[in-house]
Length: 236
Image (spheres, rainbow, N blue to C red):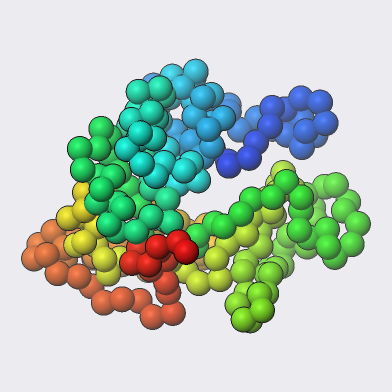
């Protein structure tokens, strides 16, 4: 559709041999066109996107965490924007944004993807019928529960790869003034696990946070039952 930017998967294979892509005759790269925007979520995708002549945004799964990496994706692949890792603190973002050679963005609201596995976690419930499109297990919600009782959503895609998400939704919309002051100019709402109503609310909240910050420098209220991730507390 017009205005949509393809996001390449974190894991994908060529549609040859015994790959899942070959089994279902699917090639995600058919959506990549030279001179048009594309988001690469792995180093392999960065390389391929550069060969295709795409206008590249680097996704948060690619660990761009220092100035050298920023310049590398800009100079080697011509990247125009980097979506920063949610593991970075606000201070680290400020350091990166200083004299950054390209635009920087962050995930503002949404479920943080923690892991992608080639193995389908739903196979723990029994043998696989090797037909993801008709798999009844994919139609119901699944979770991994940790020792504290938190439930981490598990989604298996049409290629049989499982995606594990954080148990608590990320929401740093209340930090909009600080993020803008740090040098962030692009903000993302990830609606992967949201329904239509939740998506509308999240997008509306992001827009409101931006307008309030732009108009008078103030912040909107923090959303209850959400996390700010590592923005104020680094990885330890």
